[in-house]
Image (cartoon, rainbow, N blue to C red; front, side, top):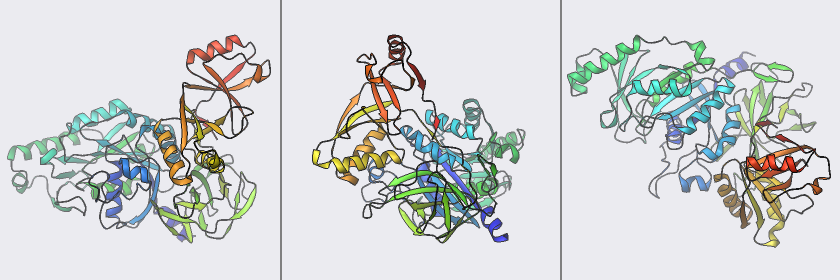
Length: 530
């Protein structure tokens, strides 16, 4: 039992979130570098011969230099077992990010030092705030010209409505950025290194040491640094309880590209973040340290290994210990099962695991039985974790295969990608599967869908964008649905649960349709739990 508690206690499971281009994938790479998981850090964009970032495994991500799927990576550092959930930075992928945050115990928010709080940062922050998970802020790109650090702290508090506590303070910025002042240990950490591919060397010096003026090439810069640090100490105190409630964000400054400040951030972050948190289920709170295994599925990914045409269900272990080949119970399927090939992942690299603990994320082979939000427990302990939200689509596209001989592949591909939660599929009532209506939250998802259908299923698509923006469930109607009086700005669809829906070209068209059809009652699809 002591081993179980020790193992769970050393787990840290966190998501990294940011606006596109703030440096999230680069920071993830550097964590892996410091954890010894990779020998040399990759770069996200650059020359054709440069390495692709480890967390970007899908071909389209390497081509575009963006993260479009959530990656899961595990590594060891300083006695901790760390699970990083690297989320898509692109705004079109809010659904995947939301689900990933459901599996995390805390979040690292990466902010661009020159741009401050950006639109996507606000959206992602709101998701974290809804779950009250601790948020740690890393102000990145201090090696470039950045905003004044005091202004950045003020902006974070004003824009996001959260209090901040600067854990360290930058020594200069842009070309003059040389390191950080570590407030906890009251020392300056000067970094050096010609390249961000390897760990940065650091030199620790007391703030008041006369040698600092020489290192900064200026007595006035040294004096300014002392004044900044003394001004900080007049501010609020650090309060770990407030951090863990999600009300106070510890802020770190650094540069993921040069590695300046990355190691102190990682070390301090691991001390401050909580071990795996207990989770709410329909039976009450499930203690993470309970010996009974339980988990929920937060992501499904098909074709991670093209050669095997496989499908993995990603499970976040919420309590106890997982053992390979032990018997478990799939609540939604109502069946006992053995998970015989559980894998832990380093992006697309995998290795079979014999055991895993609360806080860990494992990928299990899915023959098509799992859905996002499913609960797996030990036989005899039956309960459900609360569902994972799905979002109402905002863009719609009529899709069919260019080659009618590829119908089978078309059906398989659209259904599998829909089961992953990347798209939602609808059909026109009483029509076959020759064409489907695809609904997405962001249009980039359509690009990825088209790319994957061609590359993974060999199907070229015919795609026609539809003018619809709104979708409503039909709760009741006074006539047969086929007899509804619909204009050119509305269309009747069916989802794959057999529910009837209407899509509209505008908000105004909803009101117009309801007035034309007395007795028609519509229901909004807000963030709904599956």
